[in-house]
Image (cartoon, rainbow, N blue to C red; front, side, top):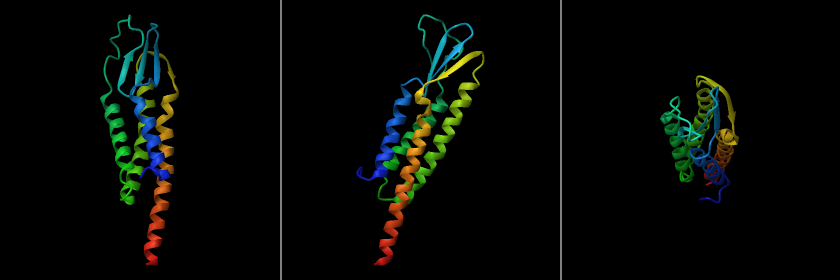
Length: 154
């Protein structure tokens, strides 16, 4: 049922969230001069020839949280027949996306010995996705009220 505008909003939200696993969201510059990039899968060295031992880990919590958000978004697209459950999934995703944005900023600003953090455009994709979820929520709610009004007339 992709012709409904709320399904298009949910699909656009999913299209914004999936590239976040591959596109760098921020770059951290250390005082020693080397640069480390960050995306939803974790930290990675930008300069291959430098030996980095400081943030050589993957952020599995952010990655798992992002996969959960993408899965809920995909499930919400195909729940067009169960509108109340689709509304709940949209509300949960809005809360999760706002929480993900807060966790990202906290996680990136709490890294030790960083001289500067430069954010790139994909860091705002979760907020844009939350706005798209809100627009989808309004459309789903409008459809639900319209179906309820039609069932009262029978």
